Amino acid sequence: MQLELFPKMVEIVPNWSPLVTFCEKYGKYYAFRQYGHDGLIEVDDFMWMHSWGGIQCYKHKMNRRYLNIDSDGKFYRYLPKYNEYNKISKFEALTSLFG
View 1: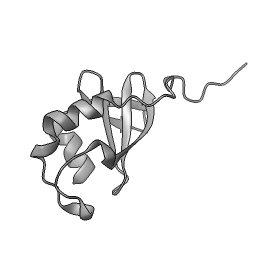
View 2 (view 1 turned 135 degrees about the vertical axis):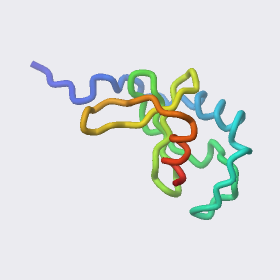
View 3 (view 1 turned 120 degrees about the horizontal axis):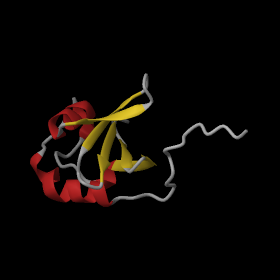
View 4 (view 1 turned 30 degrees about the vertical axis):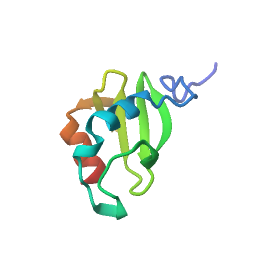
């Protein structure tokens, strides 16, 4: 019997399109000055980590926090206790990322 530790982690090729769309649409409107950030949210600020059931998980290079986005532009928070992602608002996602 083969044990699948991460059954929803299927993609190993980075998918940058949800983050690119987000940065083009909203990146210039958020002025976070923490961590030496210049005030814009840019694609180059993130590393693609993995995909989980269609949710792309990006880690911020400076503060090491995650921004999880699907192809429809919806945001998610990972809940380790349940090993799942729950939908959250854009405000909650950005507060979690830079708060």
